[in-house]
Figure 1 (cartoon, helix red, strand yellow):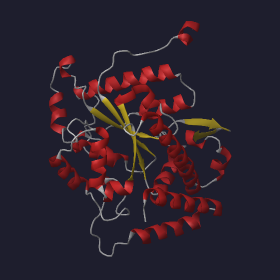
Figure 2 (figure 1 turned 90 degrees about the vertical axis):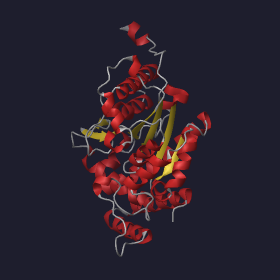
Figure 3 (figure 1 turned 180 degrees about the vertical axis):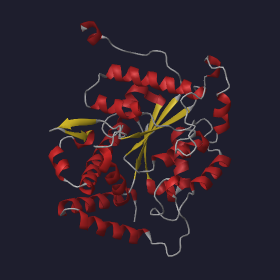
Figure 4 (figure 1 turned 135 degrees about the vertical axis):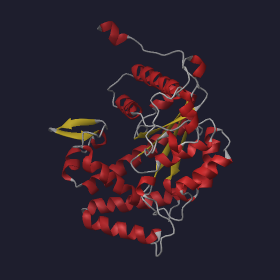
Length: 342
């Protein structure tokens, strides 16, 4: 056992596929960015893989050694690259957000099913987007593990719209067995890992208050961590994009993405994707976020963003204690100042 504890795990020979982490909190537009990546010819269909959520946090909390975590994540990503090359473990569920049927290469994925596999089928000079939840909120694990093979996009959203998603998630995360986020035990309660250091407050608060506090702490952690990563690894390694720009200034976002990944936009694919995703949109309050939740356009007497935000603030004020409402006001002020949202 002692020899195993001292063993330094390492995977020397790696494929050359590129990992694009699309990270953020709940309901911040990760799937929009992941789908927009398909305008680049080298980009594969995006996916969600649980180890890419968990391993960075286990590493950040000191629950797994860096060399073991690195060897594991590199091996898993090489496996993903090979599986994508032969359409193994690819999402063929038609209505899923990450389904191959929402990607321009859908027919390629079908044809790959008929190939024999092996080295001749390997497509390793590609970009593979993986959407994660909070994986890069407090660590630089992916950049340490992959170096220049990895880039990270952090998605953010106005807290008045983000708070509903967070509250909805928090309402079920402790009791729903389908929720797979990391949790820890505290006084016989199974709490999400982001409740660490404020456990008693978390248990006392209602779901909306928990959501406000979580957004506040995670926003601070993300801001500090992305600044650190940018200073350490450079502007070409990390990028933050606000949801409002994704849906209202889509051409600007595509230009940013093109420069960030160093790829030209396929104009034909981009036109098709804009039509399918119904972007750009007139309002950041227009719809719920997913196609399955029915985005609606050109609704008569549609409320302005300003009115919707005022109504949301009023609702929150009536549902939370004063200190949480004050915290929400600070979040709104800071977000609008940083991202020029009015």
